[in-house]
Image (cartoon, rainbow, N blue to C red):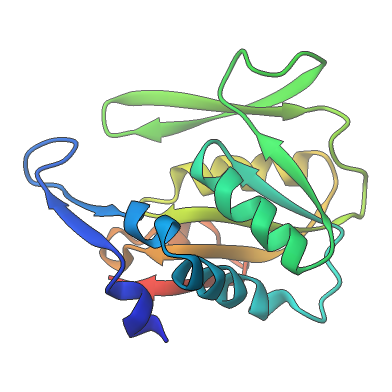
Length: 172
């Protein structure tokens, strides 16, 4: 099954800068059966674990997160880039190659003890997912695990999430 999905991922050399091999998921998103398979494989590790919510980071975490939430019969909570949320919010900053970035979520988005699955399209260095983790834990929710479509194993992003189950459909 992963071979079928791998065939729908397009490699784009030197994007967004020289030396980077970008994994373009747009062909997978355009393929109905490939997209359905990706969602099922991302949701399957968490079936039977009874999550209350799926949490996904802007923007491709929204694409996969909402679909995984539907597959798991639970709700979805977005984590946004700064300035996008209208009410009281919590924020977490994380390191980029040159500088930092910040993510935010509503302060009342999660309740203490709610069971959460974190979802994104890609796990690379782990900075984004670590910020999501910190936001969710800061609101007292329990993280059941992380589900990503693609993991770039050589960047060791899962090391940013010690003690957290990380499931990836495709590994490079």
